[in-house]
Image (cartoon, rainbow, N blue to C red; front, top):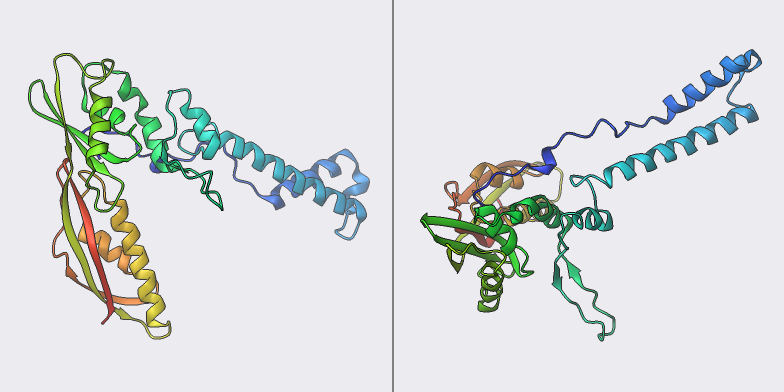
Length: 293
């Protein structure tokens, strides 16, 4: 998270051009068209061979319309995936980051690890921020995120001309190593990035550690161990998603994550209050203690 506001792509309404498909409606439309062309087909029944042909035609039309829907989504940043998203991002131009180069000499071969579609989508959306040479926070964040080892970044300035860029790494609690900070510094202070009037300092994010300690009261029926495992997985996923700069970890979110199917009640011992982070801070959960109450 950073100091500028961007559109949440997950909340963009579905485009009207994408059809809601209904096989039965397509078949009924084909049957009506056939009967309008020739009254002899008005008594057509499902056992008739001609009816089967129309069913095949309706199914193939359904597939064709679905293909049109897929192609439509593929040219929209909010919905494009994989190579489709790469091609859209190339217009920005933004390239997908290689997080780990893999090892082509290993047996079996270890393929490269690329940044996820979700992260890449956000960077593509931010691309216009990088066009500015006036030093807005979004521009510094966009350029810092070019470094593969960077999970998140923010830019702050309390004194005119002095800019602090905070970096959150991908490994462990997010504390970036020296190599990552140097890489970000080199990018940020490039001649075509940093305004001449700015002095930029790259710093590691401040990590705020916390633990999730909860007791779950299980409803009769499901195996307690499976419910607890599901709750632990859900809360782990939730706090991982909140592990970004400036992101608050609200108690309500933790309760909601723990309250999976089969849970009657949640008692949360820690944290005891919402974890509100500043733009230079990121919350990191060091332990998950989820037990049956």
